[in-house]
Length: 217
Ligand code: ACK
Image (tube, rainbow, N blue to C red; front, side):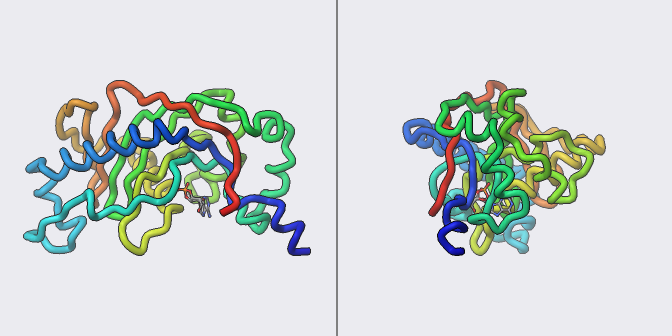
Protein backbone atom coordinates (compact mmCIF):
# COMPACT_ATOMS: atom_id res chain seq x y z
CA UNK A 1 0.00 0.00 0.00
CA UNK A 2 0.98 3.68 -0.15
CA UNK A 3 2.18 3.75 3.47
CA UNK A 4 4.63 0.95 2.82
CA UNK A 5 5.95 2.79 -0.22
CA UNK A 6 6.48 5.94 1.83
CA UNK A 7 8.71 4.06 4.23
CA UNK A 8 11.51 4.08 1.65
CA UNK A 9 13.27 7.41 1.05
CA UNK A 10 13.84 9.30 -2.18
CA UNK A 11 17.52 8.45 -1.82
CA UNK A 12 20.28 7.38 0.58
CA UNK A 13 23.55 9.23 0.69
CA UNK A 14 26.19 11.17 2.60
CA UNK A 15 25.04 14.62 3.66
CA UNK A 16 27.64 17.32 4.19
CA UNK A 17 27.53 19.22 7.47
CA UNK A 18 26.08 22.67 6.90
CA UNK A 19 29.28 24.44 8.01
CA UNK A 20 31.32 22.69 5.32
CA UNK A 21 28.61 23.10 2.68
CA UNK A 22 29.39 26.81 2.65
CA UNK A 23 33.09 26.13 2.25
CA UNK A 24 32.53 23.73 -0.66
CA UNK A 25 30.14 26.17 -2.34
CA UNK A 26 32.73 28.96 -2.00
CA UNK A 27 35.45 26.80 -3.54
CA UNK A 28 33.12 25.93 -6.40
CA UNK A 29 32.20 29.61 -6.94
CA UNK A 30 35.89 30.57 -6.95
CA UNK A 31 36.55 27.92 -9.56
CA UNK A 32 33.68 29.10 -11.78
CA UNK A 33 34.81 32.71 -11.43
CA UNK A 34 38.36 31.84 -12.43
CA UNK A 35 37.30 29.57 -15.29
CA UNK A 36 35.11 32.35 -16.65
CA UNK A 37 38.10 34.68 -17.00
CA UNK A 38 40.42 32.25 -18.82
CA UNK A 39 41.03 33.03 -22.48
CA UNK A 40 40.92 29.32 -23.29
CA UNK A 41 37.47 29.07 -21.73
CA UNK A 42 36.27 32.04 -23.77
CA UNK A 43 37.63 30.30 -26.85
CA UNK A 44 35.25 27.40 -26.20
CA UNK A 45 32.37 29.56 -25.00
CA UNK A 46 30.06 28.43 -27.79
CA UNK A 47 29.79 25.08 -25.96
CA UNK A 48 27.78 26.94 -23.36
CA UNK A 49 25.98 29.60 -25.32
CA UNK A 50 25.65 28.15 -28.78
CA UNK A 51 26.96 31.49 -30.03
CA UNK A 52 30.63 32.30 -30.06
CA UNK A 53 30.39 35.97 -29.24
CA UNK A 54 27.98 35.84 -26.30
CA UNK A 55 29.27 36.14 -22.77
CA UNK A 56 28.35 33.78 -19.98
CA UNK A 57 28.44 34.35 -16.25
CA UNK A 58 28.99 30.85 -14.93
CA UNK A 59 27.92 31.81 -11.42
CA UNK A 60 24.51 32.78 -12.80
CA UNK A 61 24.42 30.00 -15.36
CA UNK A 62 24.19 27.25 -12.69
CA UNK A 63 21.50 27.05 -10.03
CA UNK A 64 22.15 25.42 -6.66
CA UNK A 65 20.12 22.28 -5.96
CA UNK A 66 19.28 21.85 -2.28
CA UNK A 67 21.55 20.48 0.42
CA UNK A 68 24.94 19.18 -0.67
CA UNK A 69 25.15 15.41 -0.65
CA UNK A 70 26.64 12.40 -2.38
CA UNK A 71 23.87 10.01 -3.42
CA UNK A 72 24.57 6.33 -2.81
CA UNK A 73 21.22 4.78 -3.78
CA UNK A 74 18.37 6.54 -5.55
CA UNK A 75 15.28 4.73 -4.23
CA UNK A 76 12.44 6.86 -5.58
CA UNK A 77 10.35 5.90 -2.51
CA UNK A 78 10.79 2.24 -3.40
CA UNK A 79 10.00 2.45 -7.09
CA UNK A 80 13.64 2.23 -8.22
CA UNK A 81 14.98 -1.29 -8.89
CA UNK A 82 16.88 -2.69 -5.91
CA UNK A 83 15.64 0.01 -3.53
CA UNK A 84 14.19 -2.36 -0.96
CA UNK A 85 17.21 -4.68 -1.03
CA UNK A 86 19.52 -1.70 -0.49
CA UNK A 87 17.48 -0.36 2.43
CA UNK A 88 17.55 -3.80 4.07
CA UNK A 89 21.26 -4.39 3.53
CA UNK A 90 22.97 -5.01 6.88
CA UNK A 91 25.86 -2.63 6.15
CA UNK A 92 23.43 0.11 5.20
CA UNK A 93 21.51 -0.41 8.45
CA UNK A 94 24.69 -0.62 10.50
CA UNK A 95 26.16 2.65 9.19
CA UNK A 96 22.89 4.60 9.01
CA UNK A 97 23.42 7.85 10.92
CA UNK A 98 27.21 7.45 11.09
CA UNK A 99 29.76 10.12 10.30
CA UNK A 100 32.20 9.70 7.42
CA UNK A 101 34.94 11.77 5.86
CA UNK A 102 34.44 12.31 2.15
CA UNK A 103 37.32 13.18 -0.14
CA UNK A 104 36.49 15.52 -3.01
CA UNK A 105 39.26 14.99 -5.53
CA UNK A 106 38.10 17.04 -8.53
CA UNK A 107 35.63 19.65 -9.70
CA UNK A 108 34.00 19.44 -13.11
CA UNK A 109 31.89 21.68 -15.31
CA UNK A 110 29.84 20.86 -18.38
CA UNK A 111 27.20 22.94 -20.19
CA UNK A 112 24.65 21.03 -18.06
CA UNK A 113 26.11 20.65 -14.57
CA UNK A 114 28.84 21.56 -12.13
CA UNK A 115 29.91 18.98 -9.57
CA UNK A 116 32.62 17.50 -7.39
CA UNK A 117 34.04 14.02 -7.86
CA UNK A 118 34.04 12.00 -4.65
CA UNK A 119 36.80 9.41 -4.23
CA UNK A 120 35.33 6.68 -2.04
CA UNK A 121 37.36 4.61 0.42
CA UNK A 122 37.06 0.81 0.63
CA UNK A 123 34.76 1.21 3.63
CA UNK A 124 32.59 3.76 1.85
CA UNK A 125 32.34 1.43 -1.15
CA UNK A 126 30.55 -1.04 1.13
CA UNK A 127 27.62 1.38 1.01
CA UNK A 128 27.84 1.79 -2.76
CA UNK A 129 25.11 -0.13 -4.62
CA UNK A 130 26.10 -2.78 -7.14
CA UNK A 131 24.82 -1.12 -10.26
CA UNK A 132 24.80 2.69 -10.66
CA UNK A 133 27.63 2.79 -13.18
CA UNK A 134 26.13 -0.02 -15.25
CA UNK A 135 22.68 1.55 -15.13
CA UNK A 136 24.25 4.52 -16.87
CA UNK A 137 25.82 2.25 -19.49
CA UNK A 138 29.39 2.65 -18.19
CA UNK A 139 30.20 -1.00 -17.70
CA UNK A 140 33.98 -0.81 -17.68
CA UNK A 141 34.49 1.87 -15.06
CA UNK A 142 35.44 0.92 -11.49
CA UNK A 143 32.71 0.83 -8.85
CA UNK A 144 32.19 4.22 -7.27
CA UNK A 145 33.07 6.14 -10.43
CA UNK A 146 29.70 7.84 -10.38
CA UNK A 147 30.15 9.20 -6.82
CA UNK A 148 29.73 12.95 -6.90
CA UNK A 149 28.21 16.02 -5.30
CA UNK A 150 25.94 18.13 -7.50
CA UNK A 151 26.93 21.77 -7.01
CA UNK A 152 24.61 23.26 -9.61
CA UNK A 153 22.57 22.61 -12.73
CA UNK A 154 21.85 24.72 -15.78
CA UNK A 155 18.26 25.76 -16.38
CA UNK A 156 15.92 22.83 -17.09
CA UNK A 157 18.60 20.26 -16.13
CA UNK A 158 17.88 17.67 -13.41
CA UNK A 159 20.58 16.80 -10.84
CA UNK A 160 20.71 13.16 -12.00
CA UNK A 161 22.69 14.56 -14.94
CA UNK A 162 25.73 15.42 -12.79
CA UNK A 163 26.74 11.79 -12.24
CA UNK A 164 26.20 11.03 -15.92
CA UNK A 165 28.44 13.95 -16.89
CA UNK A 166 31.13 12.68 -14.52
CA UNK A 167 30.94 9.17 -16.00
CA UNK A 168 31.27 10.66 -19.48
CA UNK A 169 34.48 12.47 -18.50
CA UNK A 170 35.84 9.36 -16.76
CA UNK A 171 35.09 7.22 -19.80
CA UNK A 172 37.13 9.63 -21.94
CA UNK A 173 39.96 9.45 -19.38
CA UNK A 174 39.85 5.66 -19.40
CA UNK A 175 39.95 5.55 -23.18
CA UNK A 176 43.24 7.42 -22.83
CA UNK A 177 41.80 10.46 -24.42
CA UNK A 178 43.98 12.47 -22.14
CA UNK A 179 42.16 15.66 -22.72
CA UNK A 180 43.85 18.92 -23.42
CA UNK A 181 45.97 20.01 -20.43
CA UNK A 182 45.18 23.66 -20.01
CA UNK A 183 47.01 25.10 -17.10
CA UNK A 184 47.96 24.88 -13.50
CA UNK A 185 45.54 26.82 -11.37
CA UNK A 186 45.89 27.61 -7.71
CA UNK A 187 43.50 24.76 -6.86
CA UNK A 188 44.98 22.18 -9.23
CA UNK A 189 45.37 21.25 -12.88
CA UNK A 190 42.69 22.01 -15.43
CA UNK A 191 41.94 19.72 -18.37
CA UNK A 192 39.55 20.20 -21.28
CA UNK A 193 37.71 17.18 -22.70
CA UNK A 194 35.86 18.91 -25.54
CA UNK A 195 32.16 19.78 -25.83
CA UNK A 196 32.33 22.10 -22.84
CA UNK A 197 33.67 19.46 -20.43
CA UNK A 198 36.23 20.81 -17.95
CA UNK A 199 37.90 18.92 -15.13
CA UNK A 200 39.93 20.47 -12.33
CA UNK A 201 41.94 17.84 -10.49
CA UNK A 202 42.47 19.26 -7.02
CA UNK A 203 46.04 19.48 -5.79
CA UNK A 204 44.76 18.97 -2.25
CA UNK A 205 41.55 16.95 -2.07
CA UNK A 206 38.87 18.63 0.03
CA UNK A 207 38.08 16.46 3.05
CA UNK A 208 34.64 16.99 4.44
CA UNK A 209 32.62 15.35 7.21
CA UNK A 210 29.34 13.86 6.07
CA UNK A 211 26.56 11.86 7.67
CA UNK A 212 25.25 8.70 6.00
CA UNK A 213 21.49 9.06 6.03
CA UNK A 214 18.49 9.37 3.72
CA UNK A 215 16.26 12.06 2.25
CA UNK A 216 12.49 11.87 2.01
CA UNK A 217 11.70 15.31 0.59
O1 ACK B 1 22.64 15.19 -7.47
P1 ACK B 1 22.17 13.84 -7.29
O2 ACK B 1 23.12 12.74 -7.02
O3 ACK B 1 21.17 13.44 -8.46
O4 ACK B 1 21.07 13.85 -6.12
C1 ACK B 1 19.78 13.83 -6.63
C2 ACK B 1 18.91 12.91 -5.83
O5 ACK B 1 18.90 11.66 -6.49
C3 ACK B 1 17.47 13.41 -5.68
O6 ACK B 1 16.93 13.66 -6.93
C4 ACK B 1 19.68 11.73 -7.67
N1 ACK B 1 18.96 11.00 -8.71
C5 ACK B 1 17.77 11.33 -9.29
N2 ACK B 1 17.41 10.40 -10.18
C6 ACK B 1 18.37 9.43 -10.16
C7 ACK B 1 18.57 8.20 -10.85
N3 ACK B 1 17.69 7.74 -11.75
N4 ACK B 1 19.68 7.50 -10.59
C8 ACK B 1 20.58 7.93 -9.70
N5 ACK B 1 20.46 9.07 -9.00
C9 ACK B 1 19.37 9.82 -9.23
C10 ACK B 1 19.85 13.19 -7.99
